[in-house]
Length: 210
Image 1 (cartoon, helix red, strand yellow):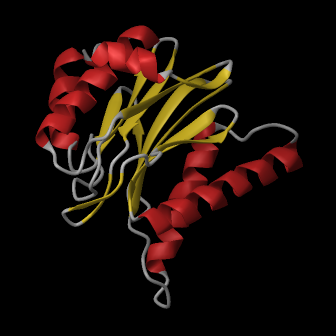
Image 2 (cartoon, rainbow, N blue to C red):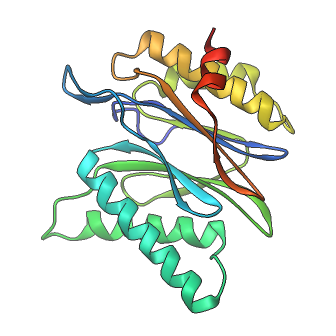
Image 3 (cartoon, rainbow, N blue to C red):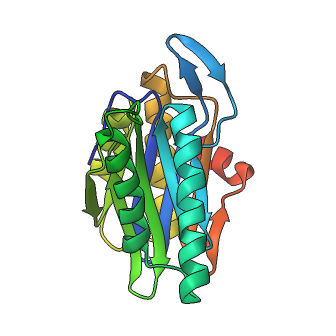
């Protein structure tokens, strides 16, 4: 599934039998200029939830701050984290409200929202206009997503392990980096499971890329 291919990046997320794997490249572009080479596009927003981001950096930073605060407030009020579905809908409503306000400049950013709660592993695709789709396998966003989706379509299978998912995610991003000029400068991968959000060490990612 693809939210908006115009964003200059490639992000990936997939459901595995023992976790959610999320990954993205590190390149930030301004037209044909590589503006930054160490951008973090896979961002934890709570103990068991994370997002991938594609779009304008200012919008990404603002939306990320707001959704983190909203999740924290709900946790304080209820004494527990909200469900992944509830949190994803909060972010979708934020995007929808922002783009519908005539006095404001619309936010141009797409998210993949993944997490774990008592119902299991969940993944949602949130577009810049606030639309939200439940994903039960994999999703990709950004300008390199068409290349990444070809790899995901070929290699993904139901009930794969996190280890297999990490391998597929890195392979899909490597393919996108070889064809999309806005995708590059390394790969970040995280895994979400009952223990929380875990970063995959760069050494492991590099070993898969070889």
